[in-house]
Image (tube, rainbow, N blue to C red; front, top):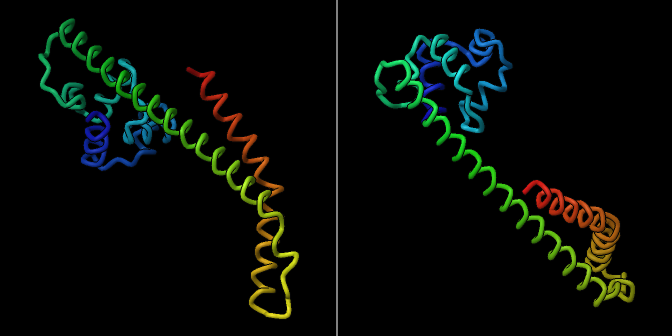
Length: 169
């Protein structure tokens, strides 16, 4: 909600991401991340953002908060805490999905190696007088040659990725 409100208010003011970033003394990518919901501004930046967009913080947060000092600030802090928790949960879900994807890649590579090892190189005994068999045999040989050289690198990278993702937990 915050991300959508920032983007809508920025566009209604006719500002580009770059122009808003300059007003806030941040880089354009920071504004882009706020608008995509990948990060949220801290409390001080949220106040600066509301001033730059000439909009109350309550409107940016999508609620009509009371215009009081301490109570309003407490409500803003609670809302930011909730948003930070949601971002952390989304980031953790992304890490889990990436771990499963890398694990699946390891299984696929191992299975492909098993199939290639079990078959040997059947194309070596083929009769290459037939042009279609010659093309298919050459293509299979190229695939096997490239796979045998690149798959171990992909396997090592996938295992390293899984290990790095586990260490960040």
